[in-house]
Length: 171
Ligand SMILES: CC(C)(COP(=O)(O)OP(=O)(O)OC[C@H]1O[C@@H](n2cnc3c(N)ncnc32)[C@H](O)[C@@H]1OP(=O)(O)O)[C@@H](O)C(=O)NCCC(=O)NCCS
Image 1 (cartoon, rainbow, N blue to C red):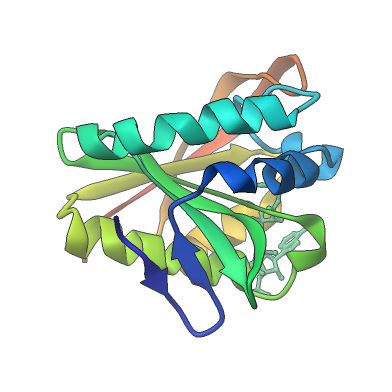
Image 2: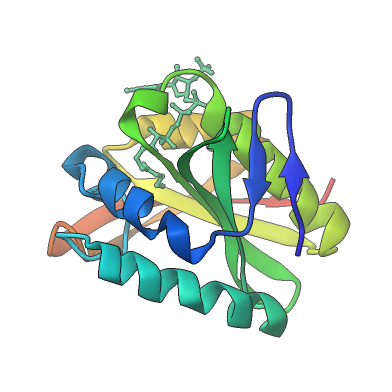
């Protein structure tokens, strides 16, 4: 199991005892509305079931998901998932009090390096809701380029939204 460390953060596999914090963070509409597939309202039971999928996904090589800790406090997640044919998808979310301090960029940079150097992926994709420019900023700071736009279903909003798509290759 991989643990990534950055200047301010520890990125480690999630454990069952994280379920309560995940549910607390994802109960905030401002957080969950920006996620594409997370159900709303989000519960501790859903978090526990999600965490249980992480080890099998990791063993299958289809996803590597990290809980983000700062000063011992769980504040979000960052992952590379949908891994197939040397390509993976980068994603992240943080509790609202942690926004605006460069934390998503710091975590995503570490996971991107793990994906390219550790997993030897050739390309990463990502995407964000059109009304989520902060996420676009994180991606462009990491060297992603905008490659398109699509109508996608948003599970929490229960409607179709515009999604901006990005990608970048291995350095
Ligand atoms: C999107 C999210 C991960 C960003 O986290 P963060 O730690 O605040 O991001 P960072 O501080 O690393 O970078 C955000 C950048 O966007 C900028 N930004 C913030 N709000 C913005 C806005 N409304 N318009 C344009 N840029 C904005 C910030 O200034 C910063 O850029 P800078 O470093 O050049 O100043 C966080 O807001 C979040 O978890 N949101 C809810 C879940 C989510 O959206 N997940 C991503 C789904 S695609």
